Image 1 (tube, rainbow over the protein chains, first blue to last red):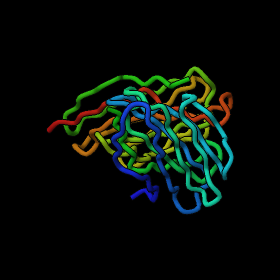
Image 2: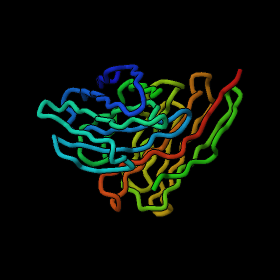
Image 3: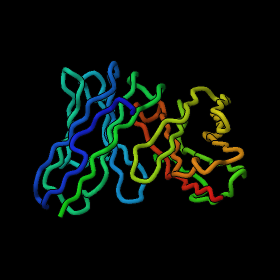
Image 4: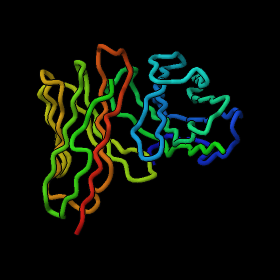
Length: 114
Length: 111
């Protein structure tokens, strides 16, 4: 158990809909990363937050947005969903704002868009 | 911006050794290595922070050549439990805090 909690574990929704994925980081970690992993593909970096502020942005679509709340949990919002958005979405947390400390991954949310 | 890993896939017999390489087109600040079993979360193996740093973890070790912007993961006397996809992750001062994972290397260990 990495200490990172993601909910829900599975999500099935229709095209055009909007969903929210939730991530609670490990106790004490201020940094949260979001990644998308399509079937048998690599991990695509979406966005990073540190202590409530957006820190780095990767290949995140405009239809996607995220935020980190004062209690440090983070949410990833996906809207106007398309079939191609079906993927595993992971969040990871780490102690530092940079890339100098290890990241711990949650078990992921499997999103299926039908 | 995504680091490139080689080989893409490798099949080993138990007890054999393997090397996985990770190359970046950008200067690197850190290199992380993770292993992911199918359908599971990536699990941290090790992090290298300095050029030339080498680390070991049981029979898995890694090196980081900052000048060449490369890292290598060494697996010796492989065990069945080593099977999975290995990803390197890199942080570069040129990309702020963006943290990119490599293309992945699928490793299968057979009896």
